[in-house]
Image: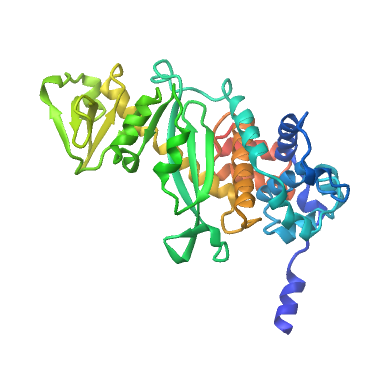
Length: 387
């Protein structure tokens, strides 16, 4: 017991000096204000006994993600009692019980609209891919990632009783380097089943072989008026139509393309066929099917290379999210935390003009702790190649 008391005495308390800077929070609040303007209040929000407003709760969650001092809901409640936090983040102190209950009373739909609004403003600030921007209107890299959940989060059952997980499905806009569409579900739900109703016409999707394994999914994408580039499994039952083989240019061969033509996939309608571009990189051979027939084989290979950008973004998302510390444990509370992290990533991209990286996140945390001023933050971001 004496040892525990000694550790408690050594543990630093949260002070106003540790929570001195709020640049991202202020941008987030302005974004929320636009989404909440003119919105009718729910019965819960009309209750005269309620003091915690929806914008205060969301701002506190975002503040907790960006501040390394706050690592739990209890710490967030403690921070809300500081005068400077009440001036910049929330208007009054918030009890632990109110914070815990808020995840069930405020839906994440407002945050999803705010994310789309924020991402829409990235059009003029983030650079396009010069080789593909003129050929495609929208290029989405689609994938999902699993984030470990706590054992007591029974709704997030995954694989077996000993594992819990939350799956984040994401459409990442390659040209603007921002997330476009996101859904948060239990990890056990089928990725393809979740994605089917979210496919939109006029978009080019690039995805890995898990999605290419479902030939009906490729047909559905085409029926929705969209285009795609999927990777096939190595043992995919396909029949090459030799008569349709295209001649490869020097640029195609430089990109690793070894074959380009039409193929028929078994168990598929006989009149439905796809273009296949075979790319060989070192000892790896990739079979890419697509319904893009006007682009060169080199451009098809380039589209698939962009698929890795969603993987890089997932790493950055988990860096912001602090996955080992969930601020809420319900499906709605988890979705709110994920949406806040996504909005934060877009705000940082708009602020710097480039996609954030791990070094930039460290610089912002130094700034949040008060260890760096505005000039030093700018210098750190320059070193992180963010400005």
